[in-house]
Image 1 (tube, rainbow, N blue to C red):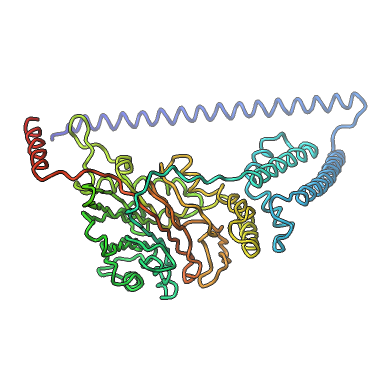
Image 2 (image 1 turned 60 degrees about the horizontal axis):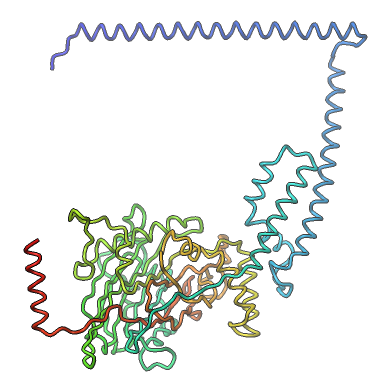
Length: 547
């Protein structure tokens, strides 16, 4: 490309001229500003001299350094008087707060020896400090009277909030369940955060309760064991030794009658599904998929593993065939109290990806009217399954101060030692904590886990313990105890047989959670004769060819 040099020179000269013009305009603007400042200074000096002259004419002496010192001293005395009055108001306010705390009996019981008055004060104020700040910041500038009244009103509001917590009760209702046949499936599920350490045989011995013929449990047809933080997060070409240890532990504890149908791992997440030999012939199809939810949706520290299972059972006497499509998921969602939205987004990503990766024989792809494939958002998968079980370290926390949660746990243990877990006092204490459980609030609001349910929680929070002890976190982080390890389900034909935590497994900072369920069959059809079946298939092919 040829460029005219004369045109380039003209363009550069034009730019230089424009820059010079801009500099001249800035110099003129600065000169005008300096002139205005000088005029203002001269006018102020004239006004000061006129005031001094008027004071002299009235018999007053002009201002000197001595008068200025006297004025400053008077102002300092006034400030000291205001500070004294403010200190008196603060003392009176502290007395009223102390009276309010001593009169508040709804936060902790008088029988709790480990909770003193300072702990009660921190419980009362900690959760509502944002509300108190807004009240004080939004008030007018502080005279002692207004500051005192605003603070008292804020503390009264916070006290009312905690009185409501103590009085209101959470009613956990079981969903309406459909009828379950006598030949239903029995399914057990385990979720266990191993904290990158292998459990001992004694700690994993609760797996034996899922065996058929064992007196401790009902005996299960299907057993799924999911683990989180099973291995350190690093690139590896072979299976880690902790994953092998957990897999061998499951096979050893369940016995020879159980066959592993699927074993899969994703980073530190591991999943193993076992099937009893009596129902092995009913398995029609099984498939596995995984979804990463870590950093950039690439890192494997967070994510999920899904197992698609389809089972059929023929009833020779009635000429019927029963079938069920099931999805079992074990997951590890985003951590920390404040990341509720991140956990909800992880759930949405998991179900949408599992819908997109579902085998065609298991779930037919959804199409638009024009024949194109519809976008996968997870809703089609959720509505098409007969049973969905979602378990893992879901990391949903309790939105309450640590001191309040610990005081409730102390009272629950005290009641358990006296009257058992079914006493009304234990239920009310558990409901105080469950009312602020983030997962239950999320399900109720419909932001995630739509249509999911959970068995009744009758065990203490499973996170976070000092490893090897029954003490909740005593490190400098002082994490609030919470039910982070959960099993939720979406099904109309399910009966919860047990939902518990294995408190004897103490090697990790989490406690394992397990549940056993009866699963009803999803679809029941009559068995068609071979001739009729062939004719129906031929007609369907002819109809497709015409279309």
